[in-house]
Image 1 (cartoon, one colour):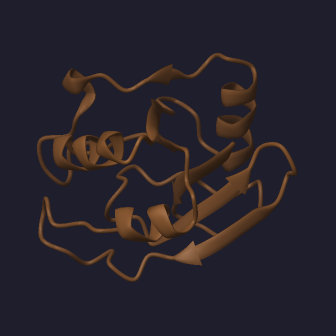
Image 2: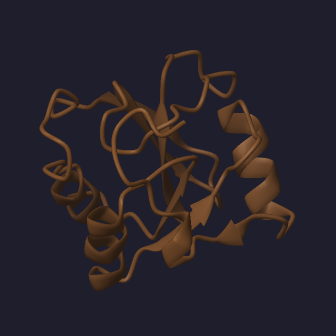
Image 3: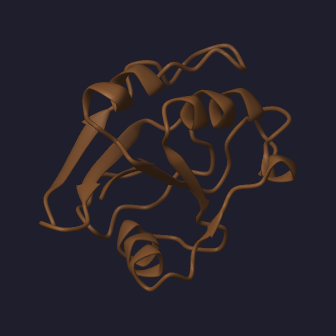
Length: 122
């Protein structure tokens, strides 16, 4: 499965997960089967609330799931329309922890009430 994770830092598996999906400075694209990891810049991190568009990059990279701490309702809807599953990383700090939780089946899918209402909600 190819997953995307919003990141604050670029430190491989020790990278810190960003608090908010759309405004993260980086994204990790991880293939959970092969272990391949790519960290890319989010060229759209400085956007108006509700106007993030990393989803276009995700569709080009065949992303199947997103692991995140905070995400808005519009982004959840757009990802779901693409068939991308969205999981909540909640209290997890690093990319390694998030991937481990997903592989162990411990990560829960996002629900509508999990959606952020504005930047700074964390």
